Figure: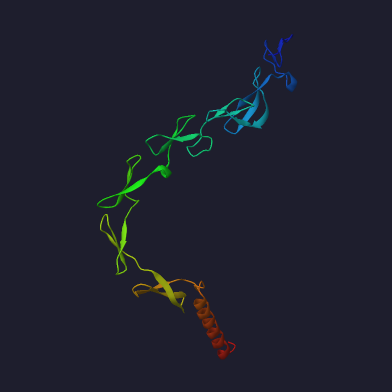
Length: 220
């Protein structure tokens, strides 16, 4: 119920609660809405005004940004963010942000050495052992194999080059021969392997043969 004589506190009557809608009477402050927006809010009546995007600026020596409009803090940054100031932790392969203390694992600091008998790798800095990083020490043998001096495993060591290619139904077959022992194998290359002049010549020869066949057959 409206009172007869209002007592205004800027935009609101403190007796009956009536609100004046004129924006110049509101006592606005900018408050956070969410991580994207902030909005003008009247401290007297709660009316909303203009809506803005946050205008963030970096807080010196902290992993934080502050909105210069509403004062809200943004500090939820992932470890890979450039806002962090990382330094290597002595005796470890991790890095620590000097501002917020977050720790990030960094593989580039590992220094691997091989372990016998299975050639697993151990980092001499942090002591971690990785089964996926193998540090074989190979010795080449005359029969196109190589043997690890640490764990004794033997792998093939052929040096193949392509010697010919031929077109087949649905693709091309390339023939390879080892330059050291003469071992040969075939591989389906899918399309014409035109990286060598000889292969291009074979492709052109095959194309001419197909055209000649079409001419001899005549129109269908």
